Image 1 (cartoon, one colour):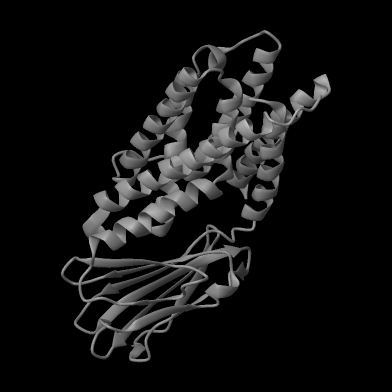
Image 2 (cartoon, rainbow, N blue to C red):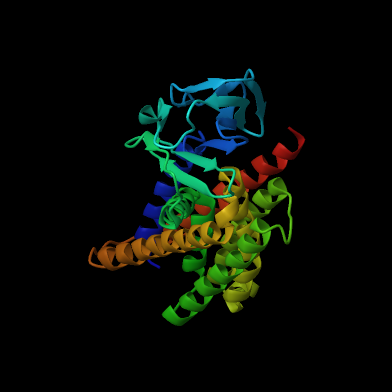
Length: 331
């Protein structure tokens, strides 16, 4: 990969990372679990930082009145409210709105679980802040919702994208690139499915720290290869991509647990979330190579030391994340 593209992508990544650090992209989450013909247990979760929470609010239909006072708590970067409501006549045909969503850059996921085990899932956005509760769930709605969540998660997951970018900087040749990216995809698909289905478990905080460490490791391997001291990542990039891909899959699973899945459609939601992740990853790779093709048309001379800028940019940001996430263990 040529320097101009890599430098540009790293600069964009740093700016993107700064935006993402405010947690504005974490979705709000409203769950309504039916407990009787007209009664529901409500859960409302929004991103929070310290004592400050994101200013979005779930607005239920006027026929819904609380039967218990809301119980609020702050934990793990989220503000959570739980309460019970009685909705005269039920929820079918009524409208649920998230106030304040139009003034943010985030989304809200709404999940309604019925007594018969079916569920309706909807994704609300700043441009579409309300939904109509339907009498029967549509599988295409679940598929579309989780497909979009998967695409959004990978495109806003700067650490995952930087790992992919580092692999592209390390690997030379189309065949090696395809094999390496395929190994990464296969690995994170395995652990995403296994962790989501409860077959394996891994604590999220250490996983996030090791994900950052994986980016730093590949950045160091790029420097070694340029100094004619190729390491394991340069010789067998698909092996490194597969091993670290397993860890990245746990990271994807943690994000999916945050928003939850409909109990009656877990395989469907998991499948389309993973498909969304792959689509987002392919869009990023396509952007990288399209930019390479475009910038090859621009002839410019760069000083020899400038080739190190994107590599140190990726490695430095990964080192910061590693330290920050390790320190979070003791916070």
